[in-house]
Length: 225
Ligand code: 5RP
Image (tube, rainbow, N blue to C red; front, side, top):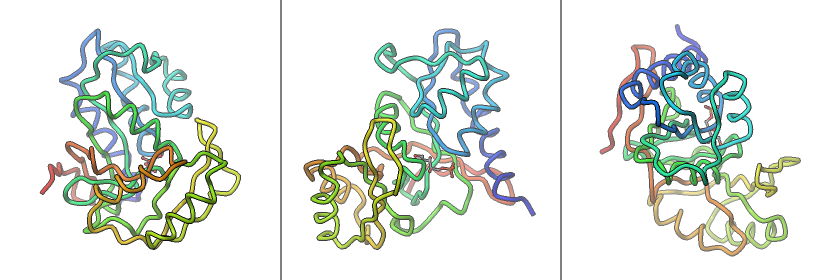
Protein backbone atom coordinates (compact mmCIF):
# COMPACT_ATOMS: atom_id res chain seq x y z
CA UNK A 1 0.00 0.00 0.00
CA UNK A 2 1.52 3.30 -1.10
CA UNK A 3 1.40 6.15 1.42
CA UNK A 4 0.12 9.61 0.47
CA UNK A 5 3.74 10.80 0.26
CA UNK A 6 4.54 7.92 -2.14
CA UNK A 7 1.55 8.96 -4.26
CA UNK A 8 2.71 12.58 -4.26
CA UNK A 9 6.22 11.53 -5.27
CA UNK A 10 4.86 9.37 -8.10
CA UNK A 11 2.77 12.19 -9.52
CA UNK A 12 5.67 14.64 -9.14
CA UNK A 13 7.88 12.26 -11.16
CA UNK A 14 5.13 11.81 -13.75
CA UNK A 15 4.79 15.58 -14.08
CA UNK A 16 8.49 15.91 -14.86
CA UNK A 17 8.16 13.23 -17.57
CA UNK A 18 5.07 15.07 -18.87
CA UNK A 19 6.86 18.40 -19.27
CA UNK A 20 10.24 17.10 -20.51
CA UNK A 21 9.23 17.55 -24.19
CA UNK A 22 8.48 21.23 -23.45
CA UNK A 23 11.93 22.01 -22.05
CA UNK A 24 14.31 24.10 -24.15
CA UNK A 25 17.17 26.49 -23.32
CA UNK A 26 14.97 29.63 -23.34
CA UNK A 27 12.02 28.17 -21.46
CA UNK A 28 10.80 29.54 -18.14
CA UNK A 29 8.41 27.23 -16.27
CA UNK A 30 5.68 28.21 -13.83
CA UNK A 31 5.98 26.44 -10.50
CA UNK A 32 3.33 26.30 -7.79
CA UNK A 33 3.44 25.63 -4.06
CA UNK A 34 2.88 22.80 -1.63
CA UNK A 35 4.23 19.43 -0.55
CA UNK A 36 3.50 17.83 -3.95
CA UNK A 37 5.24 20.69 -5.73
CA UNK A 38 8.22 20.37 -3.36
CA UNK A 39 8.66 16.83 -4.69
CA UNK A 40 8.16 18.07 -8.25
CA UNK A 41 10.95 20.63 -7.75
CA UNK A 42 13.24 17.89 -6.43
CA UNK A 43 12.47 15.70 -9.47
CA UNK A 44 12.89 18.63 -11.86
CA UNK A 45 16.30 19.68 -10.53
CA UNK A 46 18.38 17.05 -12.44
CA UNK A 47 17.01 18.58 -15.68
CA UNK A 48 17.92 22.18 -14.81
CA UNK A 49 20.46 22.45 -17.64
CA UNK A 50 17.65 21.89 -20.16
CA UNK A 51 15.61 25.03 -19.40
CA UNK A 52 16.24 28.65 -18.42
CA UNK A 53 14.54 28.76 -15.06
CA UNK A 54 11.19 29.24 -13.36
CA UNK A 55 8.72 31.79 -12.06
CA UNK A 56 7.49 30.83 -8.62
CA UNK A 57 4.14 31.23 -6.88
CA UNK A 58 5.72 31.54 -3.43
CA UNK A 59 8.84 32.40 -1.48
CA UNK A 60 8.79 28.77 -0.26
CA UNK A 61 9.07 27.27 -3.76
CA UNK A 62 11.52 29.97 -4.86
CA UNK A 63 13.85 29.09 -1.97
CA UNK A 64 13.66 25.38 -2.74
CA UNK A 65 14.42 25.97 -6.43
CA UNK A 66 17.38 28.23 -5.61
CA UNK A 67 18.75 25.52 -3.28
CA UNK A 68 18.71 23.20 -6.30
CA UNK A 69 20.41 25.81 -8.50
CA UNK A 70 17.29 26.51 -10.58
CA UNK A 71 17.21 30.21 -11.52
CA UNK A 72 14.06 31.99 -10.30
CA UNK A 73 12.71 34.88 -12.38
CA UNK A 74 10.49 37.76 -11.36
CA UNK A 75 7.25 37.25 -13.28
CA UNK A 76 7.61 40.75 -14.74
CA UNK A 77 10.67 39.50 -16.64
CA UNK A 78 8.78 36.60 -18.19
CA UNK A 79 6.96 36.95 -21.51
CA UNK A 80 5.69 33.45 -22.22
CA UNK A 81 5.51 30.27 -20.24
CA UNK A 82 4.53 26.92 -21.80
CA UNK A 83 3.32 25.32 -18.61
CA UNK A 84 2.44 25.92 -14.96
CA UNK A 85 2.59 22.94 -12.59
CA UNK A 86 0.81 23.02 -9.24
CA UNK A 87 -1.12 20.91 -6.76
CA UNK A 88 -4.64 21.42 -5.46
CA UNK A 89 -6.65 20.86 -2.31
CA UNK A 90 -9.64 19.61 -4.30
CA UNK A 91 -10.29 19.08 -7.99
CA UNK A 92 -13.54 18.05 -9.67
CA UNK A 93 -13.96 16.11 -12.90
CA UNK A 94 -14.33 19.33 -14.91
CA UNK A 95 -10.89 20.40 -13.58
CA UNK A 96 -12.22 23.18 -11.34
CA UNK A 97 -10.10 23.41 -8.20
CA UNK A 98 -9.93 24.68 -4.65
CA UNK A 99 -6.41 25.88 -3.91
CA UNK A 100 -4.73 27.90 -1.21
CA UNK A 101 -4.30 25.39 1.59
CA UNK A 102 -0.69 26.56 1.65
CA UNK A 103 -1.76 30.20 1.47
CA UNK A 104 -0.19 30.96 -1.92
CA UNK A 105 -3.44 31.21 -3.90
CA UNK A 106 -3.01 34.76 -5.22
CA UNK A 107 0.46 34.27 -6.67
CA UNK A 108 -0.60 30.85 -7.93
CA UNK A 109 -3.47 32.42 -9.88
CA UNK A 110 -1.21 35.15 -11.23
CA UNK A 111 1.58 32.84 -12.42
CA UNK A 112 -0.94 30.35 -13.83
CA UNK A 113 -2.58 33.16 -15.82
CA UNK A 114 0.65 33.71 -17.75
CA UNK A 115 1.11 30.05 -18.67
CA UNK A 116 -0.27 28.39 -21.77
CA UNK A 117 -1.25 25.25 -19.82
CA UNK A 118 -2.02 24.46 -16.18
CA UNK A 119 -0.98 20.93 -15.21
CA UNK A 120 -2.49 19.99 -11.85
CA UNK A 121 -0.72 17.26 -9.88
CA UNK A 122 -2.67 15.49 -7.15
CA UNK A 123 -3.10 12.21 -5.38
CA UNK A 124 -6.50 10.59 -5.80
CA UNK A 125 -7.78 11.79 -2.40
CA UNK A 126 -8.08 15.29 -3.91
CA UNK A 127 -10.56 14.28 -6.65
CA UNK A 128 -14.18 15.05 -5.70
CA UNK A 129 -17.58 15.06 -7.39
CA UNK A 130 -18.37 18.56 -6.11
CA UNK A 131 -16.01 21.15 -4.60
CA UNK A 132 -16.61 22.42 -1.08
CA UNK A 133 -15.52 19.72 1.34
CA UNK A 134 -12.19 21.55 1.79
CA UNK A 135 -12.66 25.01 3.38
CA UNK A 136 -12.31 27.64 0.66
CA UNK A 137 -9.34 29.99 1.28
CA UNK A 138 -10.02 33.65 0.54
CA UNK A 139 -7.15 36.15 0.78
CA UNK A 140 -8.27 39.52 2.18
CA UNK A 141 -6.85 42.96 2.85
CA UNK A 142 -6.57 43.02 6.67
CA UNK A 143 -8.84 46.08 7.16
CA UNK A 144 -11.61 44.23 5.26
CA UNK A 145 -11.38 40.95 7.20
CA UNK A 146 -14.68 41.49 9.07
CA UNK A 147 -16.69 43.06 6.26
CA UNK A 148 -15.64 40.30 3.85
CA UNK A 149 -16.42 37.66 6.49
CA UNK A 150 -19.99 39.05 6.78
CA UNK A 151 -20.46 38.81 3.01
CA UNK A 152 -19.10 35.25 2.94
CA UNK A 153 -21.47 34.29 5.75
CA UNK A 154 -24.34 35.75 3.69
CA UNK A 155 -23.32 33.37 0.90
CA UNK A 156 -23.83 30.47 3.33
CA UNK A 157 -20.24 29.92 4.47
CA UNK A 158 -18.59 29.92 7.88
CA UNK A 159 -15.40 31.99 7.54
CA UNK A 160 -12.57 31.47 10.03
CA UNK A 161 -9.45 33.64 10.13
CA UNK A 162 -6.28 31.57 9.56
CA UNK A 163 -4.74 32.51 12.86
CA UNK A 164 -1.24 33.99 12.81
CA UNK A 165 -0.84 33.50 9.07
CA UNK A 166 0.27 36.33 6.78
CA UNK A 167 0.56 35.70 3.05
CA UNK A 168 3.58 36.56 0.89
CA UNK A 169 1.52 39.65 -0.07
CA UNK A 170 1.12 40.84 3.54
CA UNK A 171 -2.56 39.87 3.67
CA UNK A 172 -4.75 37.49 5.68
CA UNK A 173 -6.72 34.38 4.82
CA UNK A 174 -10.29 33.47 5.69
CA UNK A 175 -10.97 29.72 5.40
CA UNK A 176 -14.63 29.30 4.53
CA UNK A 177 -16.32 26.00 5.32
CA UNK A 178 -19.89 24.94 4.65
CA UNK A 179 -20.22 26.44 1.17
CA UNK A 180 -22.29 24.55 -1.38
CA UNK A 181 -20.48 24.96 -4.69
CA UNK A 182 -22.65 23.61 -7.53
CA UNK A 183 -21.39 26.35 -9.88
CA UNK A 184 -17.71 27.06 -9.04
CA UNK A 185 -17.19 29.75 -11.72
CA UNK A 186 -20.25 31.74 -10.60
CA UNK A 187 -19.17 31.58 -6.94
CA UNK A 188 -15.60 32.57 -7.85
CA UNK A 189 -16.87 35.62 -9.73
CA UNK A 190 -19.17 36.66 -6.92
CA UNK A 191 -16.47 36.33 -4.22
CA UNK A 192 -13.99 38.20 -6.44
CA UNK A 193 -16.47 41.10 -6.45
CA UNK A 194 -16.51 41.58 -2.67
CA UNK A 195 -14.50 44.71 -1.81
CA UNK A 196 -11.38 43.75 0.13
CA UNK A 197 -11.01 40.31 -1.44
CA UNK A 198 -7.57 39.93 -2.99
CA UNK A 199 -8.16 36.48 -4.38
CA UNK A 200 -10.50 33.55 -3.96
CA UNK A 201 -9.12 29.99 -3.86
CA UNK A 202 -11.57 28.78 -6.50
CA UNK A 203 -9.81 28.17 -9.80
CA UNK A 204 -12.82 27.69 -12.06
CA UNK A 205 -13.02 30.74 -14.34
CA UNK A 206 -9.63 29.40 -15.42
CA UNK A 207 -9.20 25.82 -14.18
CA UNK A 208 -6.58 23.23 -14.97
CA UNK A 209 -6.04 22.03 -18.54
CA UNK A 210 -5.06 18.57 -17.42
CA UNK A 211 -4.69 16.76 -14.10
CA UNK A 212 -2.24 14.00 -13.34
CA UNK A 213 -3.84 11.87 -10.64
CA UNK A 214 -1.78 9.44 -8.61
CA UNK A 215 -3.41 6.30 -7.24
CA UNK A 216 -2.43 2.87 -6.02
CA UNK A 217 -2.47 1.61 -9.62
CA UNK A 218 -0.28 4.39 -11.06
CA UNK A 219 -0.70 7.91 -12.45
CA UNK A 220 -3.64 8.65 -14.76
CA UNK A 221 -4.40 11.69 -16.88
CA UNK A 222 -7.73 13.47 -16.29
CA UNK A 223 -8.70 15.85 -19.10
CA UNK A 224 -12.04 17.13 -17.90
CA UNK A 225 -15.64 16.18 -18.55
C1 5RP B 1 -0.99 26.00 -1.90
C2 5RP B 1 -1.86 25.12 -2.72
C3 5RP B 1 -1.44 23.70 -2.84
O1 5RP B 1 -1.36 23.38 -4.19
C4 5RP B 1 -2.44 22.82 -2.16
O2 5RP B 1 -2.60 23.26 -0.83
C5 5RP B 1 -2.00 21.36 -2.20
O3 5RP B 1 -0.91 21.18 -1.37
P1 5RP B 1 -0.21 19.79 -1.13
O4 5RP B 1 0.50 19.43 -2.40
O5 5RP B 1 0.72 20.05 0.02
O6 5RP B 1 -1.27 18.77 -0.78
O7 5RP B 1 -2.85 25.50 -3.27
O8 5RP B 1 -1.53 27.28 -1.77
